[in-house]
Length: 205
Length: 104
Image 1 (cartoon, rainbow over the protein chains, first blue to last red):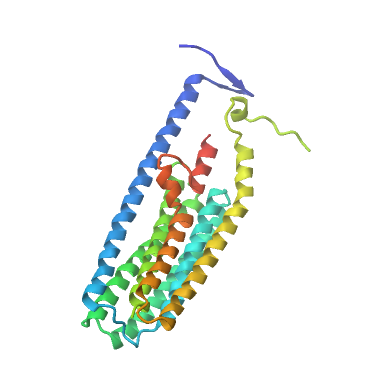
Image 2 (image 1 turned 180 degrees about the horizontal axis):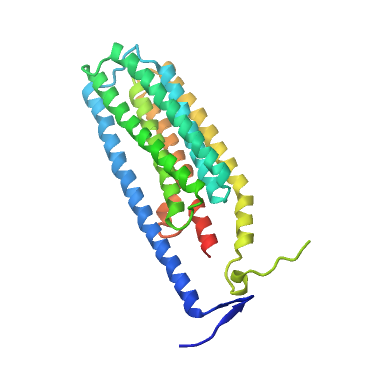
């Protein structure tokens, strides 16, 4: 094997070291590529789950929507969730640019908006129990679909807190950066699911 | 202006770490602008979606067309769906690119 060395300042780097560094990087890249494929498959399976619940709404309750349903509140929580998706996108962009302080700020803004969304859902639930309890066809569809979504929002909030911790500890190497990307993608998926749920439960009549 | 000392990576013919990070930071403004534009489009579409049933009876199809457009905006611009689909084995999202730059 060639004994060629490259001198850089006080450091001496052998070709073997360079090859090792390169293969480590390739291994990290392939791990991220596999993880990203898995993430998209997970999102696709979750989308099928939500699609089944949305289909059940139309099968069980048709297109009828109770008049007591507060569409204004539905619009408000939809806007909050869309705003949270924008802030998650900005967090990812700033993390990508190396501005971890702003990235963390936007992650926490997303967490805050997610919590406000859950508060709105709780308010909607208290009204819903009074006007269309889960024993009715629409109530079954409403409570099951919104509960399923709220569970995803809750887990998304926990995952965002974990992502914020990764950014705070500056663990943005190899899989660390992908973990932040995965959490943000998951949050966008939660938003995407609500984009389908909002007309299904609130607007169709 | 002080001339920049060549780094280990530039001497070895690799991509210069510092200047790439700087270019990423300058590109950051356009990413923010894009995000705000998509956010504004989503807000307008949500308002239209809200008004549709008040104007049109049995407006299921228009509602889901608007929802599909909103979904596509989120999927493509926020989740980078097309980019991930075409380049599944490359580190092309902002956070992952930064890691590639720093590890290079």
